[in-house]
Length: 194
Image 1 (cartoon, rainbow, N blue to C red):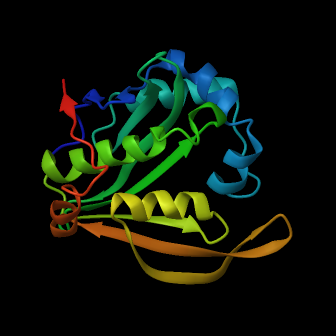
Image 2: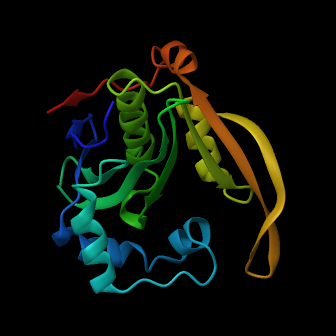
């Protein structure tokens, strides 16, 4: 198994593709969104446009992670990202994270993108487990993760201080056998990889 091959995954609504340095401008715009900031980054995280260009230019060659741009299939516009990282080869597991900009929300693009990359992880890369953490005050993300098949596994109570309030981190995961059972459910997405 290797994350060094960066596929293009195509669904009905989205195309997931490898990032390029040129994507930094679109990502920079997405990172200005208050909801993305609130639910995605540690307080005090700082990014620069030049730093993003460097980060996204390097992602296409990273052998230990898979970062894919989420694009709207109808327009080609970059609306977010999905990432498999923190690869543990002995456990055949990795972490999942995503961010979705305002133009990608409430249209099913995020749900489809998550199904595409998680399906790729299980069906093509042979993963056993994909895990994630989501803030307890982010019900939209939790609903999407549960719809895709992630199961709550535990809670880190008051793990982060966000906007002056303590927020829980909910730990969620999905196993290969759960994916196999879930992928045939209504709304599941089949993908084509190029």
